Image 1: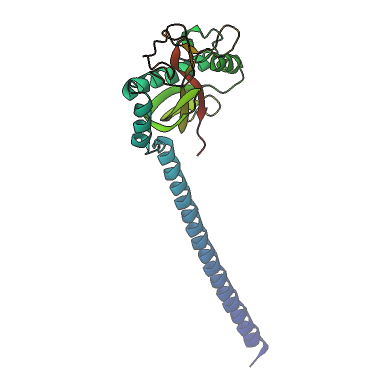
Image 2: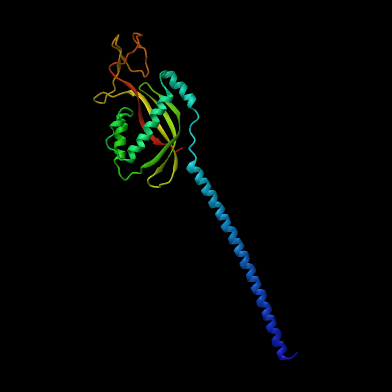
Length: 241
C-alpha cells in the first residue's frame, strides 16, 4: 500500500470520525432541546395552574361561619324583639358607608352617630384622616351571617361575618376578604363618660341587668325613660382566619 493510499484512508477515517462526532453532537443537542421544551411546558403548566388558582381565589367569595342558627336562638331568647334581617340590612349599609368614607378621607362623621358608638367613631376619624392609608373601591358584599354572640351583665355583642370583595388602592387587584362587625347592645355613657342605670319608675331601684324587662325588687314592668339601651356598631375588622 503506497503512501497516497494511506493518506487517503486516514482522510476517510478522519471524515468518518467527524461525521460520527457531528451526528452525536446533533443528537445531544436535539435531546437537550427536547428536555428544554418539556421543562418549558412543565413551567407553563405550573404557571397556568397558579394563574387558575389565583383567578379562583380572586373571584371566589370567602367561606363564612355555619353556626348562625345556634347563635340566633340565644339572641332571640335574650332579645325577643331582635330582628336579624333588619340588623343585617343595617350592617350592610354601614359597611358600604364605612368604605366610602375611608376612600374620601372624611373627617366629619356625623352620619355615623346613629349607628356607631362614640369610641368607634373616634377610631374611624383617626383612621380616615391618614391620606397615605390604603383605601378600597368597588366594594361588593356577597353574604352576611351571625358568627358569634356574647353577653355579660353590662353588654351584649352580636358578631356579623361578611364575605365581600373590593379593589385596594395599593394593588388595584380584585380581592376577596372576610370582615367581622361587632354589633353591641349597651347603656350609652352619661355626659361624663359614666355608665348610667335604668331606674324603676315604681320603686326607684337601679336596674343594671342587661335586657331586664321586670324590676327585680318590685316585679314591675321596666320602662327605660331616663336612659337608652341601644344597638350600635362598636368594631369592624378584617378576619384573618
